[in-house]
Image 1: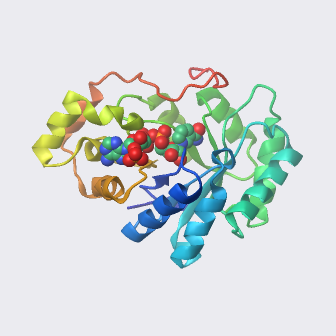
Image 2: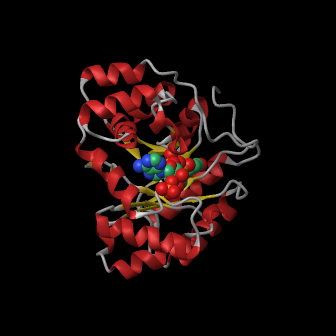
Amino acid sequence: MILKTPLMAMPALGLGTWPMKGAECERAVESALSLGYRHLDTAEMYGNEEAVGAALARSALPREEVFLTTKVWFDKPDEASFHDAALRCLERLRQPHVDLLLVHWPSPGMDLPGILSALAKLHAAGLAKAVGVSNFPPALLRRALELAIAPLACLQVEHHVMLDQSALLAVTEPAGMVLTSYTPLGKGDVTEHPVIQAIARRHGATGAQVALAAILARGRVAAIPKAAGPERQRENLGALSLRLSPQDLEELRALPGDRRFVNPDFAPDWAA
Ligand SMILES: NC(=O)c1ccc[n+]([C@@H]2O[C@H](COP(=O)([O-])OP(=O)(O)OC[C@H]3O[C@@H](n4cnc5c(N)ncnc54)[C@H](OP(=O)(O)O)[C@@H]3O)[C@@H](O)[C@H]2O)c1
């Protein structure tokens, strides 16, 4: 399933790579690509861009068949440092471009117009085919959309069946952006919820497949579950062929929607 917008064509299900590094990360990416994954998520901060790039090179897949995302960390708060860091990402990945380049987190002191200018320059130079942001709360996302020189194609945030992101979807949908769900399995925890397990039994599916299918059913929403080994990678891919019923979706909507797994001390005020 490919999410097509005027700005990019992103496979709806990708492989998250945090916190894998080195040989473990290379093995996971190689296995995912051989199973049919065509979307990889990495970041400067993960310390695994070399491994992701090496596995991608070894796969010998045509470059245009794989959608590659990376992100620049928030300690690059101005145009020059952000631009330079993005070039270093490409060097580590050994790639001429990425398909999506994201601002990893906002920070209180960041020069937002400067960073958006860096994104636009990298985009214009063909080094980032599309650009976007991650972990931006609604008001800041609206401000970024107003200031953006290169249009923002994607918002990456935590989203799963127990973290409703309606306030952000109300911004991304009219803007034509894809919302990419990170931590879509709630680190594995939400897959065990009794409501999810009951729905899974009705379909002969697994809790993880239900959790992922629920996200993908929302439309312009992607998911990047991390799974180190081929069994769970294959299981998670199976979500693409699971069709949840209106009743399933209603039961899932009734779950508490405020469970957040990623909330570091540098996180923004999520309600802002
Ligand atoms: N933009 C950001 O700030 C940000 C923040 C966090 C994450 N991310 C991205 O999002 C990706 C995914 O998020 P995440 O790693 O935090 O959480 P996640 O994908 O929700 O959960 C990963 C955990 O679930 C387990 N798992 C995988 N498949 C499973 C299955 N079928 N059944 C049960 N458990 C399963 C994994 O274990 P095994 O690997 O051992 O199988 C791992 O422990 C990251 O890898 C990263 O690329 C981005």
